[in-house]
Length: 152
Image (tube, rainbow, N blue to C red; front, side):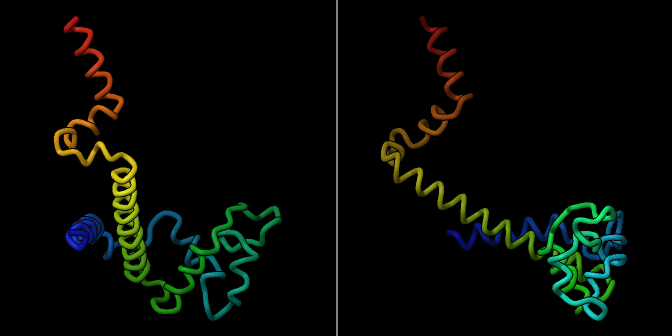
């Protein structure tokens, strides 16, 4: 059953973002990638990623924005190494990372549902299985409270 859920999640990601793959770089992509020397694997050492801000400016200077995102800049370096400034590669890596995160959220939600069912044994009772989650939800409680008040 989990494989079906993963396929649905991945299909949703692909259907949602496939049209972005052939788009060009936009907005701040030019400054963050093309104008950032830290993204260029041939001109700057990788250590600079950990010493500079997101825009390639040295942290602590007046020019620095102060936004420290080394993992993002490392992913830009990876993309630059393989795709230079071709936007398709950057978008493809973005969609793949998004798909990975969505699958992780799917499994995390499944874990929490199983944990909730184990902690609340009354939910596994077939007579209450459909009613219990609604009664636990604030709207369900409000509906129940209003219904009980109306019948009095």
